[in-house]
Amino acid sequence: MSRYENYKKDMNEQIREYNTPVDAKHDSAQYASDLKNDLRIIRDMSELYHTCYIELCPESTRMRVCWNKGAVYFTIEGFEYLEPFISEVYEYYSPYSFQHLSREEWRAVIKKMRAFSGRLKEASDADDLKDYLGVPRYKRLYSPFTYMFDYMRTHLSAYFDEVIAYLEAELEENERIYILGL
View 1 (spheres, rainbow, N blue to C red):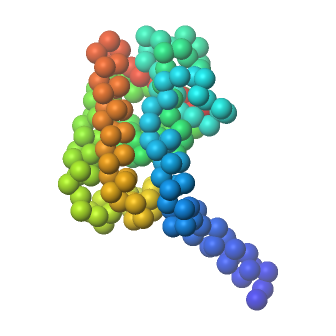
View 2: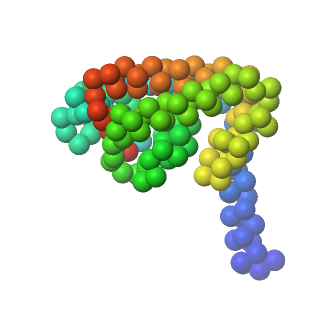
View 3: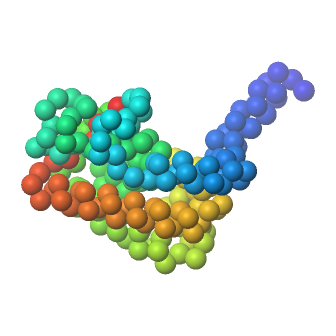
């Protein structure tokens, strides 16, 4: 086998491993624990251990570029479940930059999240959600659904409910909520 063929084989194997979490297959309890930690809003900055987070900051509490008191935080992995809705509404969305969405844009995101959450609660298996989870950028999000569908359905719908409640409360007083990739 040539060097190129070996390289190509190695790259395909890495891509396969990335798209199919080994933990979900071999250690469902640990994977479920990790997901439970990711599928939540972090309200206490003392829980942040490094800089790989997404900050949502209402304009009324934004005093500096990032790490604002009154902001909430998400793990990168948890926020990935929200990104498809945000990028559908806000075409310039990037998890690697600082941006803001208006009240109307956030309400459109909430509407899409509610619609998906309803579908999620009614779904009988992961295949019912392929049109959302099959988008290439989010394809690896599909894997936990195939291994732990009931767990994901329960926890992800609760996560969406928590995020929607947070956004609706903040939008009562704020015209904008910033997304800050940290």
